[in-house]
Length: 477
Image (cartoon, rainbow, N blue to C red; front, side):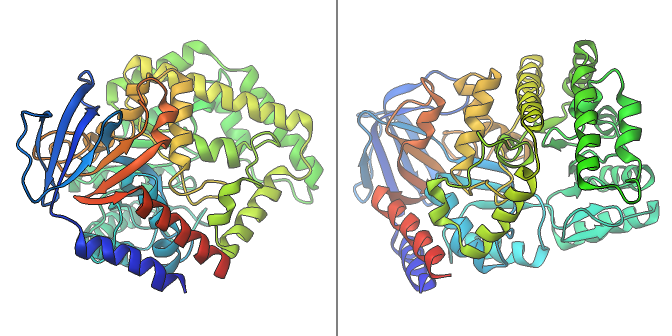
């Protein structure tokens, strides 16, 4: 049922949208770092920004759809730089659940960090050809991982030769980046790094368990996700703790024994934190320009969830299809059951330390991007990006820096800074109209009045229709 409803909404947007749009009397926050520009006009023609300047001095084409932006604020479209579009089903879950929620929340660019190439190519083709409203998609394809792999879809890489072949095969299939995962061994990891550099394609992802973040940075890993390995590398007992982490589980170990062993490991990790080691690692990241994508929503609401940060009863669950909700519920239970107050206190401490480290990274010049890891359990496509921006602000980023982490910085990372990410003439027309100033409070990024996706205008009523369509899809499945 929803497919018809959703296709009608999205099809109407793609077939009847005006080719020229003018937003007038608006305050432009262009994300370049320039001061806000009040009483401005922005003209969009054929998917590009054709004019920016003071209202009254900019000629408005007679056929333009005029949007009065009085009292409102215009920002670039947002980017979620860690997402899994096919994480809720291929491709129906992507089309009817994830993509509409992204658009309705002003997300106009995504970096998919693990999925099947054929499905991602299909989604990108539909969006690029105007057959479907959706964000611009960049993707890695399947993970490169050890044996057994952590997740699917994965390509198991255990030797240097397999690493070389995997990089070349994925590049020939048209991926934008190579994704490395946690179980890669050093021989395979460094072969991937060398071949990626040789072929001119960057590699991103987890820091493998057997590799330090400092070594990954030196090897040229372009971005580190979820702060993998960062806290461990800030420990004075780093090598000992890494050995303990990699030691095979004792035969016959009970669940309570495993929990106690993990609790002791985390306590030792936190107690051995060294500010000196942290500063050294951060200096390396800054020198090598190793980008960080902390993905706070999945850290806080899943990886280190506590009863206080659990979102199991969040009202946004009405948008989540039952099959996805069941997977999320299993993940929640696995993370919350049989844990003690001490476990939850340790998790909260890890989150606080992670927020602190990200603030120190930002102050030292380490580039940071916003990302969510949707649709991981408790991570809602679209709206969870606002949570990540809030955590970045809590870490010490200014509201402008947090905004840039989801606009100008992703464009720079992707090598598309000349085409998108800021509000400037000639750039892709991805824009979000807000009812309040995000530079006064980053939470105001949630107050969306309209979205322009590649030159197509969706006013509040159309955004609400998208949300209603997702809710109907979820209730019907």
